[in-house]
Image (cartoon, rainbow, N blue to C red; front, side):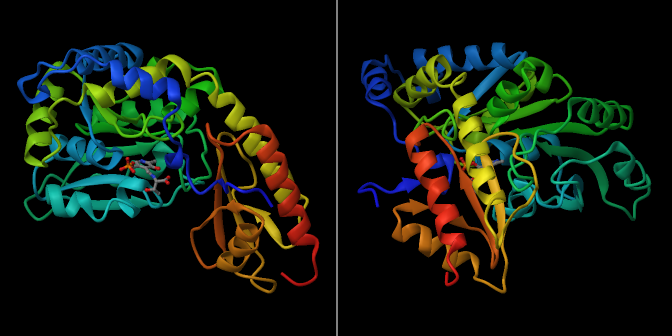
Length: 349
Ligand code: TLP
C-alpha cells in the first residue's frame, strides 16, 4: 500500500509540475478578449503551425472545442455522422442537439474506427423532407476504442469521400499527440484530411486547463464568435497558455513512456484470470478491460485496487479503464500491475 494513491482514472488528473507553474507565473499577459494576450498569441501560432493549419483559438475545454466546431460547420436541422462510442456523442451532454440543433447519426465502428463504405449510403437525399448531412466527426486516438489510433489511410478515404459530397470533416484530437508519438506520423499529416481539429493540453500533456480549435483563418474567426456565444472567452489567460506552451516543449515525446506503461498494465490484465482486455490490444495510454461478472463487478474490482492505493475508472457494470500519464512512474506502474495480478489470482475478490 502506498500513501498517495496511484491515480489511473484519467490523464486529466495530472497536476502542473513545478517548472510548468513557474512558466505560468512568468507569463506575460493581456486581455485576450481584446486579442491582446501575447502568450495566447504565441500558443495559438505554435499550435496552428504544428498542426499545419492557418490559425488556432485557445478555449477552456475539449468539449467546448468540439462543440464550437460542430456549431461552426452546421445550421440547425443539419445532421452529423460519427462513431457510436465517440466522445462528442456519448460524453458531451447532448451538445450537438442542445447547442447547435443538429441531429447526430451514430455508426458502429470497430473499436472506434469507421470504414468509408459504412458511410457511403448515409447521405440524406437533397429533398425538403430530410435533414442535411453536413459533417463527419472522427476521434483520434479513440477513447472508448481503447486509445486506438485511427488508421491514416481510412481517415484519408473518408475525407476524400466527405469532401466530394459537400460534407466537412472535424477531428476530436484530444489525444492526437498520443497518436503522433505512437505512430511516428507527424501531427500535420494526421490533421491534413480535416477542416477543423480540436486538441487538448490538459490530458496527456499535463497542463491544468486548455484546449484549442484549429482550422483556416476564416473558420477560426467564426469559432471566435461562437466561443463568445458559449461564454468561453477569457481575459488574462496567458497564464494558462504558458502552461500549454510548457507542455508542448517538454511533455510530448515523453508520451512514449505512458504508452510503454500502458502495455505493462495490459500484460498484467492478460495474465489475470477473470479479466479481459477489451479491445484486446493497447496502442497508446488507455487500457480498457472487462471483469468476468461471475466473479465480480467493475465497482468491486475498482474497490479492491483502491484498498491497495490504486485508482481506476469503473466505466460500466463490468467495464473499467486505466490510463497512464505524466504523474505515474514506471515503479508505480509495476506496483499496479503486480496488484492487478495478485487480486485476480485470489479466489475471493
Ligand atoms: N474525456 C474524459 C472524460 O470526459 C471521459 C476522460 O477522462 O477521458 N474528447 C475526448 C476524446 C476526450 O476523451 C475528452 C475528455 C474530451 C474530448 C473532452 O475534454 P474536456 O474534459 O476538456 O472537456
